Length: 207
Image (cartoon, rainbow, N blue to C red; front, side):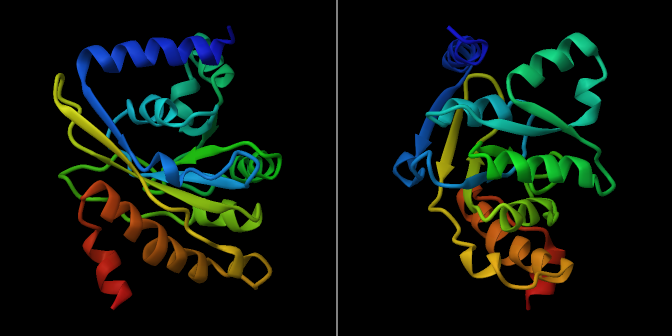
């Protein structure tokens, strides 16, 4: 049994004990030979293992670099598919790495908000996920996590239909266009799936 498979067993046991998990939309997951990345809202540090549990294949994660500061833990999550990104500034090295992983057929999870949301409202999405998807010629599989992480409560993972981005693959893309894709396509869908309202600044910019 691989380390990832063992981790799935542990995660499954943990969530079975402490939460009531429901996963909707598994039929929307594309075949593994299709190129796509996974984008979800970010409520808790437990989001990555929950999404990993919902997917029938191994996934990788873009994670804040602070998680890698404790070397034993950093080494462990690297083996489980995580790779670091610096928050609060553009980390083009990490984004290039994510593009190469997606081009190589790996399915990675990116949280477009760039950090955990608070007050039951989505944060404004960053364009990095859209950039990775377009550069890697991949579509986006949106996910919305609905519910709180209070022990013994219900958590629902809603998997939406893939967001088709092929019209952008060969087009000239600017930062403004990628942000528009993020706001109007990605974050709008995540809002619907998670049942969390979008950041008001996104709504104003979209009008």
